[in-house]
Image (cartoon, rainbow, N blue to C red):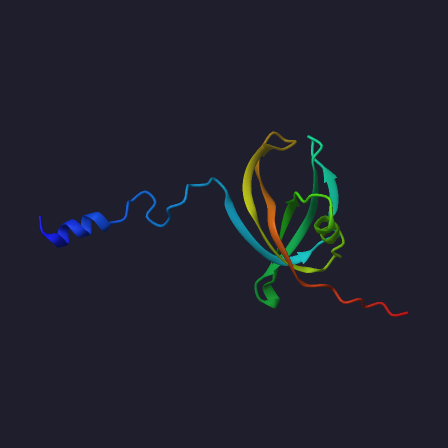
Amino acid sequence: MSFLTRRAIATAPSLSRAFSASARRNVARITIVGNIAATPELRATSTGREMVEYAVASNHGKADNRQTSWFRVAAFVEEGPRRDFLTSLPKGSTIYVEGDAVMRPYTDGEGKTRSSLSIYQRSLEVLRRPTNTTTE
């Protein structure tokens, strides 16, 4: 076997995960840029853990054919300044959110199996706050 053949075999990428040396994860990442639909709300889970929930509207398409996609986002933020900041964001704030996306099946009231996209916030950046249009 020639030197070049041995080298090609030794450096050939594995077919299973040639692009990454990290462990496989069953979580998809999602990035959303959009506007907060309403002021974020603090809620408790069934286990008593607190989370902040909010909806984000993201528009796409040209002005004459614009469509809006709605996303529900949950953030598990400990009590403190970060939670206070998140819950104080007003409706209409433009944000950049990165999170984990998980599809979950459920059965609706009619017995049909449906899917729900759950997004768990990892990071958030405020791009623009709405301007106050009221004058005194």
